[in-house]
Length: 321
Image (cartoon, rainbow, N blue to C red; front, side):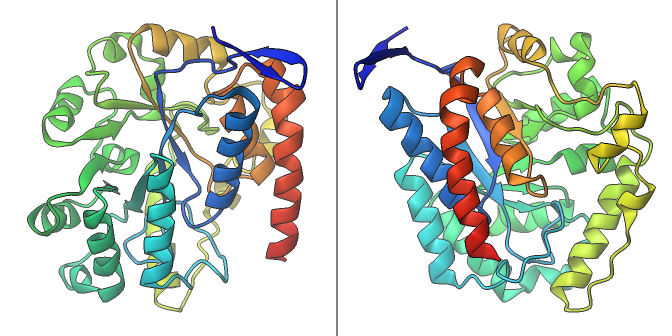
């Protein structure tokens, strides 16, 4: 590995893998912290973090990602969104919008706000993560420069888990797709996937073979729609979940399905290079801990980089109060 001199000390290149593509959350929420981390690592080691996509969404009926109740989350003008997209492109990061709500109706397709986002995304050749076939058809017909990613929500809703033929169909029709987290442990299936298309979700902390996953996604879709219409109805689904919040796992000896570093290395040896890190509703400190542990050698990330980014997180959170 390359050695870099920094203040009379030498650090080796700290990246665990240099040729991977990380797809991480934070768009519109804490992208400034992502950029700060990239700058820190660049200054310290003269290497680029392998972050290639940053995903998220403003308050929108089309959004089917984790529900975020944030008073600033819907105050993005078209100029604000364009500015965010341009900033990411300056760092060679692709903006990726999570329009993953599966309950979209025909009349919803003509929403001005969402179409403005699509136009901006089309202009910068961004990506959109989808679940709804209706929305997929609409975007394919009207925004040809946007890459389409099949969401894990889509795979769940269409019962595609553990179905090689289903995944092969995704490989034909989508630029990429997220492997169902349960299938991360199915080596026979993984060995037959196109590693140029398949993306592995690394830090899902649910339990294996969760019976409530589909119901949970459906509740999120409904909550997103009610919030976007100004009549938010909290379905309180997590109260019925036995794994989230994670303190519930204290009472179980079962492991969750968050990927270990040895499993991560195994995926890499199988040829996988696309990896996803979730965290839009995680504690920010946990999110950045995950991001660092899947990016940088742990001795360096924990002792050197993590304390620095924690200081910036502290400042960021103080401003948001």
